[in-house]
Length: 146
Image (tube, rainbow, N blue to C red):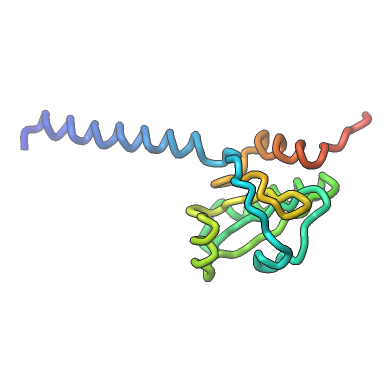
């Protein structure tokens, strides 16, 4: 193979990988408007009911590297905002649930309102500002009087 052609091919592959990585990074963790699907209490494993403000449902797997950090962050958010709870669903041995809910990556986070309606979904760890904006519509942030 001609060395110039080999360099061009390698450069093209690197450029394509960089573009795909940039697109993935730009879309990961962003709030996506949900289709309004509703869940009944008990329909999601281990979730018997919904919080009075918002329920953060995190879908994880045993092999997910970012799931523990996302779990800590969502638990912190739930602890700081009244009316918000965090619930974790392990999909490791539930591929049928992942398929039904169209979950392609973990973590995936669903934000449900008090009636169990899917308000927003995040593919990847939620970006703080975007999660705050979604929750602000459901549960006002606490005001600090300093």
